[in-house]
Length: 552
Image 1 (cartoon, helix red, strand yellow):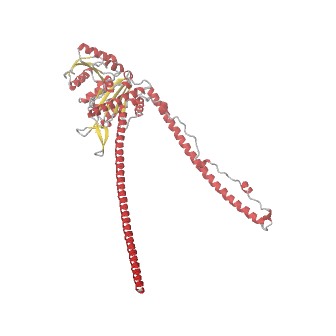
Image 2: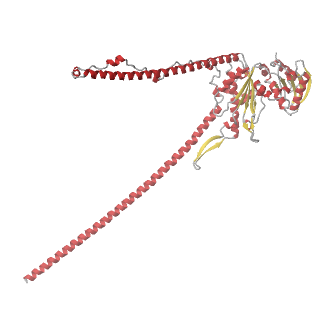
């Protein structure tokens, strides 16, 4: 019984142990499962965290890209807007320059001093280059030998010191001789260079002195000729005045000048800028939707007004500069003819229409306050012929044909023509001259009738202009004068007009008119045609002639 009880107790103990081990195994298994689950959860949390970070990074990248694109778009818009602003600034500056052409000359003294045309500076003194300026330091033989040290007392105790010392001295003397030879070669080359430079300097100085003497002599001759009112000198001086005048870019500034000493008249033929000088755009604007900078076209009426203002300004400025620069009171009258070199849009051929022509006296012009004028009104007051549509190349008749004034041109052109076969108007008889004038105005379109011939070679013609409103009775007088036509002839014409009850008077001369003649005629219905104008009218109507005065 005791053994059975003990056996049972053992069995129970085994069963308990087994159950405990099973519980522990299950506990361990559950713990491992929990660990696996925890690991899976951690892994899932890490995956989720990683995905969140990736998503956040992706969103951040998208946001950054969008921000970069936005900034890029803003920078692009800024650049295009600045482009439009820059174009508008350039446009404003250009218009301001064009509108200030006349005013630009007010602060400039256009007088040219003959002294500044001379060469006043002296030729610079001779100066050596830096590498030749320094003198080499030369050591003499005595100085060189004095630096050779004598043997010390200890060295003299060594046998053979005297021979060694003598060899040392001979070696040093050999080095000195080599040094001396190098110095000699160096000095020879240096002196040779200096000599060459001095010779070149002398030649350049001599050439400069010759140029200086020649230039200064030419200036003296020019000044004397200018003082004596010689035509070529006056023309050269006026040419220098106009060449010094500064205009905006795009202005041709091509011109010719001729001086007539008897009437003290200067004729200027000036090339004006074309209509293209006026900007065709009034404003530039950037359009975001199209991403383009567009120009708003300027109205044609505004282009016309600006262009008329520009050519008027060039005309008045040129006359102002020439009168202001007139040192010897040599010029009484200026004629300005403004031309444009263009292409005829109808034919494609080169054309050169005159679009502005004016003649004015110095006294009348200097009374004008150019700072306060209306340019168009000023030119009308001066009796200018101004194209009503210069932008369309509508021409006006030049008051004087330049080629009829400049003797250099006349001589050149006459050599190439049949000048010898042309009638000289001065040699015509009064009757022949009367018929010439009569026929001329008949061809022009007048109904002309000769009335009388006078002893001075003049001829009176009473003509009728058939045009309505502008037409009527016209008295024409012609004077075959060699000298300047004075005011008395214009007064006589005016008296004849009153006696005849004529609407207009025309005085034709083979010579030129004085300042007083123009002043008397300016407010009256009188037209003055000089010798150049007469030849021009004859040639335009198929008659080639010449005016050559007999030599005194």
